[in-house]
Image 1 (cartoon, rainbow, N blue to C red):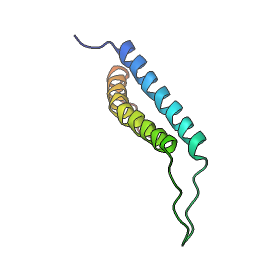
Image 2: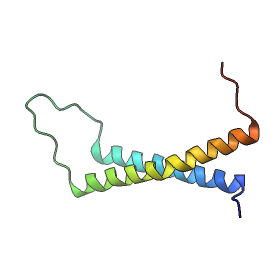
Image 3: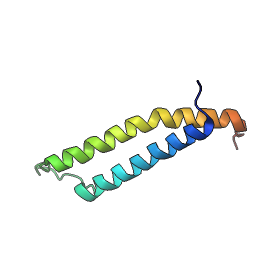
Length: 84
């Protein structure tokens, strides 16, 4: 059975929300990114840092195929938008 567009849209929104939450959590744990100065040691990553990075990566990897399917389906339903 084929997934309805509404079910696909729900899955897309859930995946997008998971990415948003994961990246917000990653920023809370890691703080703002700062370049490493020459001669400076890289920061130590705790388990909490690694777990936040892993969740953000997995959330994004799960999101990309759903995003692609959603937009291909939506454009197929609504017609391809013209390029300006």
